Image (cartoon, rainbow, N blue to C red; front, side):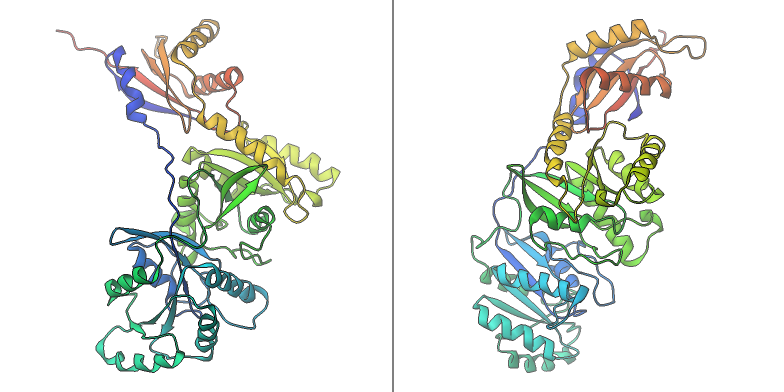
Length: 468
C-alpha cells in the first residue's frame, strides 16, 4: 500500500516522523462484573443498553428480533466499570432461530453477576415476562425489574401492577428519553459485586481477531467450531449476525479474542436500517482488531462483496489471513477454477497467507493459529534505519526512479516510521510515480518478508527553499 504524504524542508525532519505516525499501545482491562439485560422481544432492551452506556452501541430498530446474539459492552458509572450484556428477546419453548436467540439470553442470565429484566410498561406483565421472572427467582441472583417506556406521569400508576412478578420494586424509566436512568444506574451499581463471578471479556493479553466476510459464508459456524460451544447464533438465513460477538478462544496453546461480525452486503453509505448500523459495527470491529480473518466461500466464485470486505481490511491497516471455508465441498475442477480467480481477484493482497478450512467438519481450523502469529509478527516488525537505507541504496542504484518532467527524483534516505501497520517514509527530491512506489514495496517484501501485513510507503518531497 502506498500513499503520498506531503513535503519536508530539512533532512533532520525524519527524526520527528515516528512521533507524527505514533503507535497504539495494547492496554489490558481488569475483570469487571457483568450485568445481563434480558426480556421478551421489542421491550426496548438495546435502547436501555445504549442509555446505560451513554452512547449508541447496540443496534436499535422498531421491529422485534434485531438483537440475536449476546453482545458485551464496557460501561462506566460513578467511577466504576462493568460489562453490559445485551441479549435477544427471550421466549420459552421456541425452536429454530428464535430458540437459538433465547438460548443465548438464558446463558447470559445464568452466568451474569446481576440481571436487569425489562418489561414494557405500556403493555404490562405478559406470560413471557412471568416465565422469565420464574427462572430468575430460582437463580437467587440480584435482579432489577425495569418498567420501560414510562415516558410521562400517566403511566406511573400502571407500573405498580408489576409487583406481581415477584422481582421486587419496578423501576419506571424511559430508555428513549433518559427518564430516571441515573437512579437505575445507582441501583445497578448497588446490585453488582466488586469482582465478577466469571470473566466474559479479555483480562489483558489476548490478541484481537476480527472474523469478517460476506453474509452466510460461515463466520458464526467457524466461531462456534473454535470455541466448542454455540457461542453465536447460526442459521441458514443470510444476515443472522447483526452485532459483533466476541469470545475468548484457546487455539494452539494461546488465548485469542475472536469477534464475529455481521456480513457486509452493501457499502456503508448505501445500507439502511439494521444493515446500516450492523455495517458500522463491523467497520468498528475491524478497526479495533489487530488481525482480521477474511472468510471466503471456496465453493462459490469470488464476488464483489468479498473484494469489498478485503478492501475494508486493507484500508484499515490491519494484518490479514484469508480463510477459504467449505473446503470439504471443493472438487478438483473447482480448485483449478479458484486458482484463476485468486490471480485475478486478490491482486491487492498477494501478501496474505491462505488457509483452507471447513467450519462444518473442523478441517484445518488449527492451522489458523500459525497463520495469525505470522501475520501479527509482520505487523509488529521493524527494520532499522541503517539496514533499510543500505538496502534502498542498492535498489535505487540498480533501478533508479523514472524521470518526471525532465528531472530524475532522488531518494535521499528512508526510515520505518511506524509499525501496526509497517510504514516506510521515503524522503525524496521529487515526486515518485505510483508504479515505482509499488515496485519499492514489492522489493521490500522480497527482502524483509512481512507476510500477512500491509506495508505503507509514504513519500515526503523536499520543499525548494526560497531564494534570498
